[in-house]
Length: 399
Image (cartoon, rainbow, N blue to C red; front, side, top):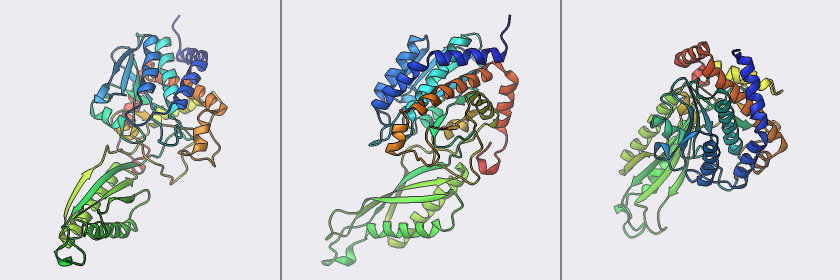
């Protein structure tokens, strides 16, 4: 007798529950051994080892990244990707809960592969390093890792229960000014002060910032300001982080920063170099069709997701670069009370708490059931892709 989709959901939830102890052990092992951007070798070995044991075909070093991987069960389309993050924060460990993201994605992939087998397309577990800095998903997306995928699914532990994440676009730029060294009293008129040019750019940015729309800002630091107080600095450099609600608004902001830097250089007689520093994170495009399914499945565990608070804009993530290519979800599920905050020692402790263990199991079950929906429900896939291709609404944050 053919199984209904509800039957599959029940079987998947039971399969995740059966593996709950192993998944929690993985989460704790990652938590106790934090590794950082593009150096998560032990984490990648742990996760790929479990996947290979369960029959997944593993490809390591994807997109030219030594700690990135894909693990596949089944073949062809439709295909669903479960995203695993596992980098930590220097000095804070897993204060963003990536140990839980990895374990939940792992559990969902294992359960979906075991229950559905190879007859319904492909289940991929995609190892995505360096979310906290470096943009593993952005580099994987550029390399085509998600080209033949119908949905990309993950959850993120947080301090709120939100069905979607209002994640902004962000990028960093290095701006260096070249002047001419001189003695400030011996021959001051011969010098061209590169540091003065950089300081003037900070002044211009300060004025510019007063007129920026909500969620947009530019924050800079001086990374090189000279070598001695009795030498007019011939070189000065700053690093500027830019954020905006949408990727298009971010590009406009980059243009304004570039124009400002070039104007300062002309005014001060310096030469300016402007270059992007690292990957650009695009804003996140939630697929409401799929995030709604995830929320429905998570409600079976007693966790209710709501829309984000109006007007709230959070940080940025390289999941945005995936969401511009395929239907994607990135819900938040709380592991602390709402007065908590991630990127803190308290949140790192919460990522190994009893509440985190319960959330891990619930999220893995909801991810597995949503993955099954993508693979087994053709009308859902069609609707999700149609939603994905619609023009973005609400400043691009709910497409």
